[in-house]
Length: 439
Ligand SMILES: *Cc1c(COP(=O)(O)O)cnc(C)c1O
Image (cartoon, rainbow, N blue to C red; front, side):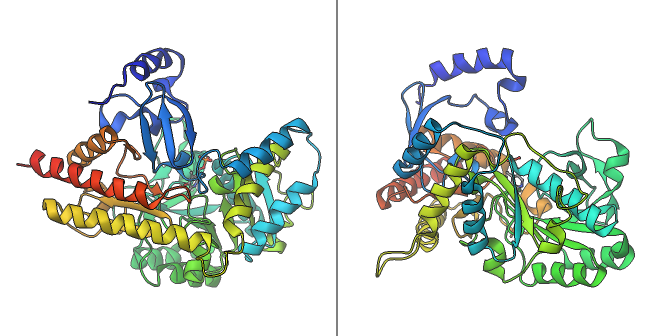
């Protein structure tokens, strides 16, 4: 049994200090019964809790830690930067350096604005889209998460396109009414919506590879359809690549699927573990942002040198030219991920447990589901009890996974073949536990 005594005490204290004991909900382990390990430190692919337990980490701070924790190059760059002061609220050259590097990898971004969180990026991109088009409605897809700004905390009943109902208290009906939520991966629903309301729509925002209902890939041709119909109707297409940027492929989902969005939101990896996000895209649209244009958006700490340094160091590692004969960083991550998932699938079969395994580059996940998973409804029909049994067994064996089936897992460059073998072995035991629990 895992000893989590100190973590349990720390969690009790934290619950009196912060809502649910955490600063972001999913960390509380509410979905899997029992409290979370409190983390003391992390290095490479390992994370260590305050009880001294060591885990192989596939959460990676929910995506950013693509080169592993405390990578020496990132740490050194940060140490040097910190001695020069952590924020000036004034322009610096490193902002342009990071901007140029991002644009090299994602040529659809002709101009960019740095912000501090993914939430800010999507919220600002929507304001920009409304300012640019002079329209008010936005379209999102059920199960896609774009941060917690009011107009995006909206979902809808199942099936038909409906004008949004708030999915959190505190979001006004007025705000929600401007958001239309329809199922992901459903071409007919999208076609119908665009026929009926296309001319009112400022923007369609999508996770081109969904990562917040578990890892769910777009159906063949689906992103192309979004591109085609938005263009026809004069609505902007916003790719929220906060998670899948630099993961679905180095150039994100837009490179992997060959689609050029009007605007892209980035986050997670571009901050290398510090709070950085960004939105960018076509120059004529981005030039509407203040002070070049009338759409207001600002940030005291935006583009601060510490955060830019972590992002630049991380992106420099993953975009570096490979040694002759070696795979580039992104390909290396994809191959590791594939190896892990093939191993998990083989162990699941041995145990007689059916899972749906999904991968997009270095994003991956499994659903305990007999059927294919293409949208939120499919994902939600997965076996929750099986997931709990699997998750707990993995944690006890030193494998740190997201405590929910509706989250994505991440590979880093620090995971070794040996880590992956160990994770596959552990999965064998965990799938057996699932099989026993179903008897
Ligand atoms: C994480 C995430 C966000 C929100 O980013 P925060 O930095 O947590 O505000 C937005 N969109 C997607 C696709 C994400 O995965």
